[in-house]
Amino acid sequence: MLKLHSLNFAMPQTHQNDARTLELAKVTGTEEDIALLQQHVKEVIEGAAFKGSHRSGQFLQYIVDQSIAGHFESLKERVIGVELFGRSPSYDTGDDAIVRVTASDVRKRLLQHYGRYGATSEFRISLPLGSYIPEISRDIPHHVSPLPVEATAAHSNGATVETPAATSTEITVAASHAVHPEISHDSNQRRGRRWLVICLILTLVNVALWGLFWNHFARKASVAASTLPWSALFNSTHPLQLITSDPDIAEIQGYTGQPISISDYANHNYIPNPEKLTPEINQICHILLRGNKASLVDTPIAVSIAELAQASSKKVEVHTARSVQLSNLQTDDNFVLLGSPRSNPWTAFFSDQLNFHFVYDKDSGQEIIRNLHPRPHEQAQYVPTALGWATGQSYAIVALVRNPDQNGQVLLLGGANAEGTEAAGRLVTNLPRLTAVLKDCGIAPAGPLQHFELLLRLSMMAGSPTNINVEACHILPGNPIH
Image (cartoon, rainbow, N blue to C red; front, side, top):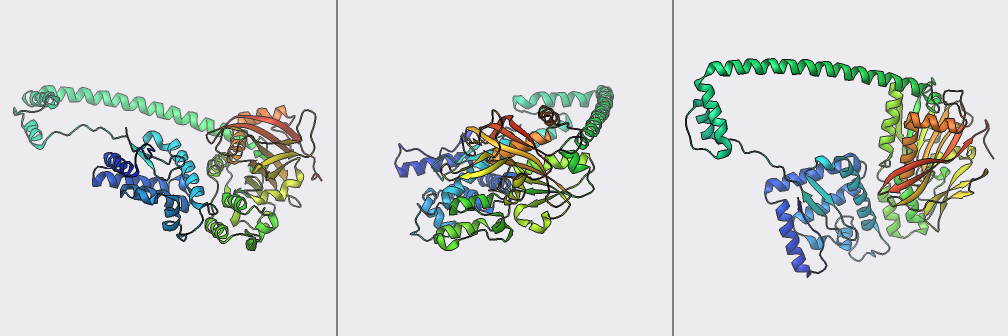
């Protein structure tokens, strides 16, 4: 493992740069090595983890290119702000955090990428906290050197040549085959019979596995089609639409300190009071609005739901929150909405039916969940102990509600952070676990339509939800709660 150590505070700056150049040369010693690294960066940027984040992809490309060129002096916050994001040389880095915010996002996306592909990746790129200089490591594969051309020619003629010890045995065997062709023929026949037997065994195993798969697929389809909430969504004659969250809108609210109501969102008023913001904050918000992406956790949830729907011969239409109009919701279609009201304002359209409400707490800078009608042993509010990508506990909501004044049903999957939404998605697509949870709540999973809401508590560790438990379960009445 070769590793570029990007920071060494004990060394003078000139020595640091020399050391970095030397270490990088070990990783990218030739033009071919550099091309391989650049191809790897391209694959990372075009992969699922960076999908939809053009700004983060540009940032990663920039810091790697500058490192390859040895321009470590360019990897400072102000320089990056000027050269990459077009800021003026005198801009206030204290007020304009675009470089720090983007670097934080890149760190998360790199963890996401290598969490999925790290085992098969030749290169690994990381960005240490407090630094904009990447660390690059490489696992160099070891290949067996091919025989020289001269040795190959001697091999075919059965001639005697001087060869390295590692190849002498192969040439000797080849020569013996040339002298005794009948031995080679018998050996080939035996090998042919062995391969025939192996192929027959593999065919039988393949047929058995396909049989198991289709039995599992059919059983999964049957369970999904008869289990709430999927029975209400899949057995309907109306289309099923899934609406992903809008993480850029959540980030804009963090910059501006101004909540975006469902009315503002529906009218595309994403920056309600721009006159109250500094030019720098306004610029960051407009940069964020150039994209229209979903949260990283939304994609696997959408895929899992699509697999359940396909097993039940149902199609799922997927839309980003910002591409949806209010009129799209005012139909008899069925919906799955991902995210909390802060990251998907459309969920607020259905919140008056819920006991558990997301509320943004300015003091802690996070969403908490307020219980409007606490029952015995329930709290009036549930406060996460850690923000996203931290260690602690958080909360999420799973709710099946009706679409007001329509005939459709709506499944809400939202967390106080991305990990919470991921936890909600995991629960509802784990049919055995979901069935057990509903039974514990007094809901017949295969029974008639019943609206309900679940409050989930989860542990968080490095961006992954664990220990997902049901904190509370409420069966909802037929009419909205006021």
